[in-house]
Length: 136
Image (cartoon, rainbow, N blue to C red; front, top):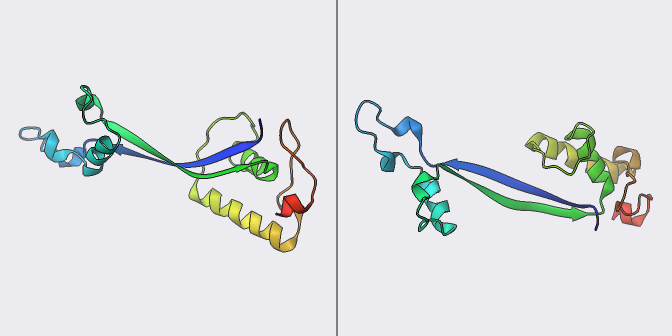
């Protein structure tokens, strides 16, 4: 058990580009299929699934980062992304919010000021002392 956190990037790809369908004539779904959709379906091994024609979108998720026992960063996410609610749920984090966190981390390190990114206590949160582990 521990304070493990994951940051993932997720992209949804629709099967059909609805702007490419000729609505005045015959509907040619094959011509309007987005190429990335076919690539993802093939890479995932779904092209042989009987119901593949019923799949109208796919989502790809990539693990972008992982960290543990960084309770100050956990607190930052709770305060700045989760509206103060620490409930172990997934939340959308914007690019601007990630840049803000990076700036905050850099300021805390540069100034050696823990008030920029204060630690938080909690069950399985690890140490909340300001020591070499905090600055490491």
